[in-house]
View 1: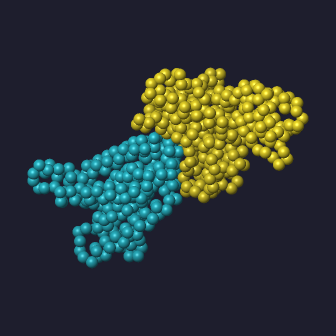
View 2 (view 1 turned 180 degrees about the vertical axis):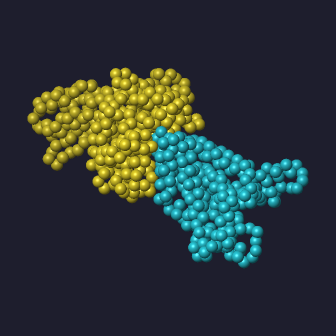
View 3 (view 1 turned 135 degrees about the vertical axis):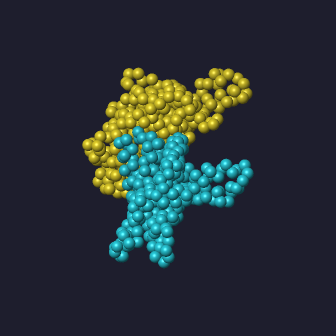
Length: 348
Length: 255
């Protein structure tokens, strides 16, 4: 699946990228583009190929086939030149234990070709952005908490003001205050730098990213804005309804409303006599108004809430990965037991 | 070149703050001071053709066996174990630059420690005035060639240590590998020549190349102010080859 955003210049172009370990393909024919200033979330279950892709992008690992261009520079042909455009924060964020934060960041700034006259200013700036300048600047990295270490990794990634920032699980181990600070930091980079973030914290990704790519079993199974993915992967709308009606009676009423509505489950029964239900509508479109008008006809129901439940990124993620697993198992059974794989497609 | 100098300064600083550097320095200087004292006592007890410096340098290999592993074992193994080598490789530096910077930093400390042994005759002079002149504690030509040998052979020993460090993620294993390789490099040729090679037969052709590799023969030549270009070539070319292989290993294992 290739996502072409031709309107804005591309900072990252990945074409047919494959990485094999013997017979096992960690990533298989992955293609995508990331526009200048775009913030992209890279999601996938454990072992899906996220870190492998990110390591190839950062020039740490060669691909078996395919190409990666960072700001027009081929990572395979000119790795050193391509690395000048990248700020990479790897998974687990390895840092030297025996150096002080300011010492380490100064070294990193110098090695990343930051002009000598600007090193001090850049280090100070990065430490201020990541809130390291108060207490942590002169502390030994080995004595820092996980949250502070993550901040050092992020400060290192943004230090040289690269065009592309790649962060593998940047918010892992951070407290809510720190997560908000990182979110604000990434928001401030939007439009200036292209940012690729992998994370398991899906609500966080939804809040931060312009676009989401979901990788599963080494292939990109979904790519687009959270809104477009909702349309592609979620076939049913859901509504939460809170009213005074026992389940049997409510089911009957819902069937009468029609529009493909059905009661999916009773969420909770409150002591004040209210019942909270989850409704599923197989017909797309906002049915909230119709539900309210139908339920308001009977005053016994005392409708308290009717709310459209927006599918979360988690649900999209689950649907996209489930679909890819089903497609793979269908292809496998087609190749082993005969039958056309095309016939079996289209589920999910 | 600028990046290489930055890397080298960084490696030097890391070595400067590492406890293993100070352990190596202490053990080396304590052992060498003791050896210098013994060589002085030996020379004063009986007449000998060999100068105190010659006796002192003849045991150079003993501290090399523990000092070089202590100085080099962390260099790549520790960084790979911590993952910091991968982080370093995301910057615009090559594996070759990293390896050579580490080599030069270790070699710098190795050279500094050896240069510190030059204080021993000066300390002797302080306690026994005129001893340098009367007892010939600092014969300049021998000093130059003897220490020249130590520095040239040291390049190969440090390269061996760096190479051993690139083979594993465990510092201790790197140290043990380094010790084994150094032992073989220093005394291997002598042992093979003495025990394994027959005086006649199909393996007799091997005696010349094995003879060429004998470290103690090189030391003897250098200590007698005999400058031979062959050991230069042997030590420097082996060091270069080992560093090139280490660069390839570092790049491959990082992927």
